[in-house]
Length: 330
Image (cartoon, rainbow, N blue to C red; front, side):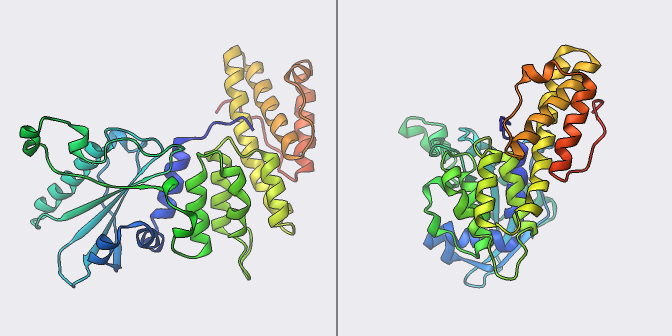
């Protein structure tokens, strides 16, 4: 399916998964260096409602803030700031430093002491992280000038460099981490079955909230997993539930096809062109979802608008999807 992954889909998945305290705790237990992990009492980890992303950047970045205590029982407040990156941005360390300053500025306004903030960058790009991890790396200067550069660094959690077996937690959590790890990598197709198999839990419905979250992310977050491949793997892993899972996924794919068709139609500049584009995009995706040979765009272009409407309705009925009015005005 020729759809482009959305940065918002990655941010949304990241915030949904890591925003849960138990998931954040399991991830920290899996990935923090031993000496750092031993300093913290992660059983006291709790989410903070504060957000320090600049308002104009709020749609482009996801920050998550947690508070924990020291392992020796000290009252010192330790904050763990999670930041998600799909690409190795060289200015990340400066961006994170700004967040840390804002956190402590807020504490001063609240008449509290300055605190330690541990920045954790969760990176899942296709290639290894190669951007600066400290201000010293970002601002190289001759040795005599180094004392004037703040000595600040951050924890880079490059998921691609962490073995699948190192992630701590139950099977559902590991499935979420693995799909996040591989979503931008070519290996996602090879790892798909392993990820789905982790969702097979005795006594749990395969259409659970976690499964829907992962399947929706696979639809919106990558263009590497085709409808045909996902159908095949779902059939192998959830043979008894395919009929209940596929309509939900098909509707996701159809919506993407309609949006792509709408954009093509807008280029023609006519209302009928938009209508035809929406219908053609929907029909091609529906045919894919049913495993049918897709029509050529030339074939569809030569059909009357009413014929396209009827064809889309017939395909929807085969997938047990509700018929939809032509929403060209969106």
